[in-house]
Length: 457
Image 1 (spheres, rainbow, N blue to C red):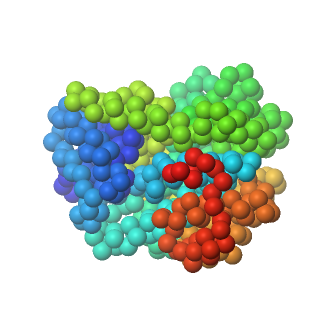
Image 2 (image 1 turned 90 degrees about the vertical axis):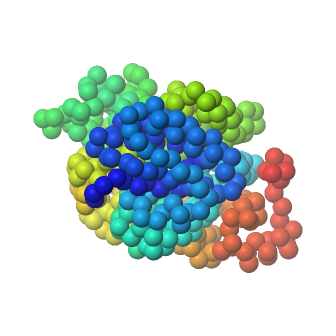
């Protein structure tokens, strides 16, 4: 690439955008940006305007001449872009409230990317990301798509498998937070540690070694029970069973708590549901505070409060990925990308989340080798569920959606789960045109939403 770089950000009105700007500013010497286009939908226009003004202030406080553009016209933003980042939420935060509260109202786990709510986030998101890919094929065919829209792994899989777009990398903040916290726990600079990650997004494991290749995983496991490691703000910190981690000799990601300590996580979620509200309701309050801060005409830096949002370091990881591609840096980053043999227990053509070296040609994966018996079984089941969810998101086929629900270990199969699926379909009617016939049938059958807060939304 030559000349100034153009970046288009889909979901530009996100509260994470200031972190994205901070990451680009830090890397300007190796990533000479000329213009950044923040794209959003009409429902997010007010937040987009606030964030756009703040983003421009952040750049104006630097020596660099970078122009921020805000638009509701996606095609205008994508035209001749070098990189496209995606950080959008179909239905805004109200959709997340529905994803969480409807399952909880029946005693099931309500979570943004896991269980019933996570599948419905995929149902809403995947058709939109594929529309974006088709626009990119016309308007910026040489651009890289850097995705951190959740569920990031399923979105990346859909882009590769159905969008037929190879220049895509999915990102997540969970490995970033884990590496930062574990380096501190071990008392070793992160640069002196060698990590190997393997799995799928929000369902991966990793091992860590020192520069001489000595396995530090057992030592880290011991230390994790002396002091807490880094966790995303949205995960309740119930400890894993130490003996389980010692048996696998790997560190599970924070989201494994939903699978390895399901009972405790469900009970905690139900307690919040009945008292302070679900995580989405808490985030809405945090977002309100953030946007009040962003309105300050003197604020030209990322406020500390953004770290409470739950997705801290997403955007910084995206900036490092883009800079690594642009400058062919071959930086070690944990990414969602095509497997290509890195994880032997999954097909070579599916998306996985692994350690990779990222440069001008994209991600070159680090091979992990075979997983232990239990983890292999878990992973294959989760990938099967993901593929069913993606297929249902694209086809709108009721039977496929039902199969995805039955396959998900966080959704006990039976009448209750089916009722939850039906209510989620009705609650998200505006964003699920592919399920229109099914939703019409359910409405005729008199299906309504049980949760009073959701019913009034």
